[in-house]
Image 1 (tube, rainbow, N blue to C red):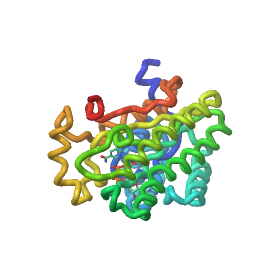
Image 2 (spheres, protein in one colour; image 1 turned 60 degrees about the vertical axis):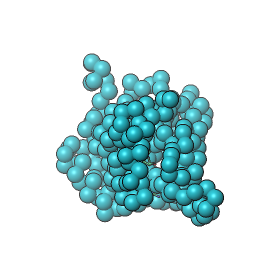
Image 3 (cartoon, protein in one colour; image 1 turned 30 degrees about the horizontal axis):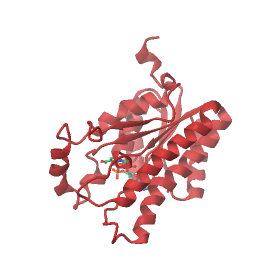
Image 4 (cartoon, rainbow, N blue to C red; image 1 turned 90 degrees about the horizontal axis):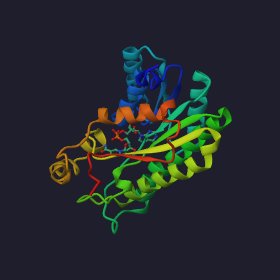
Length: 258
Ligand code: NAD
């Protein structure tokens, strides 16, 4: 088998949260293209159904939608059970759902702070913990958490302290789980994208005018695309990444390199 054949995910299955659109939709597509069966997990079930149908038709894989709120432990347990009922095992989990609320630290309400931490950090904890329990029992599995370059640097000029803190938390949560589970067959890694042109950015009217400023600061003078995040997730989900755990992968066009 050559390296590209070894990287294929035939016979594997798992899920992506926040997969109805954006980065999660792109990674779910790539995982299915690589041969895996994939559950599309999202709060927005109507969009998740459309995404699942499109990926399933394009790839011929078993791709189905499940509604879940990653901030609700009961909802997370339900979707994990739904994935297990459908696939019988969980080989990979891409914990990717996230939100951003921009507000100056001095003015951010506690409700805004809690909302961001709840989805971005507590949601990843609940999802990775629930998937991790299944994987520990199986004796194998790969968890991929979406962090951000905001877990490494403070973005400017927009104020987003809760988002930055939540993503730094995801990176350390990832490393902590990786160390605890390293000798039990479960790998845990995170990806830290730079600015990516998804609705998280493009549906936020306060962020759109900032794109030119970000691009001026960026060594590549552009945002990334969702397609540029696909191969790292396929790699991490598969067996060629067997010695890769506890790592965070910056995919930001060198934005955080200086
Ligand atoms: P997006 O807004 O396009 O998609 C996010 C998806 O998550 C949506 O489908 C939404 O319905 C779902 N979601 C939100 N809250 C949820 C919840 N409580 N339970 C289940 N699903 C929920 O965003 P995106 O840009 O694709 O971002 C995906 C991840 O990548 C997020 O964690 C984000 O922080 C991270 N990220 C994004 C960028 C960027 O520039 N777009 C950069 C770095 C990291």
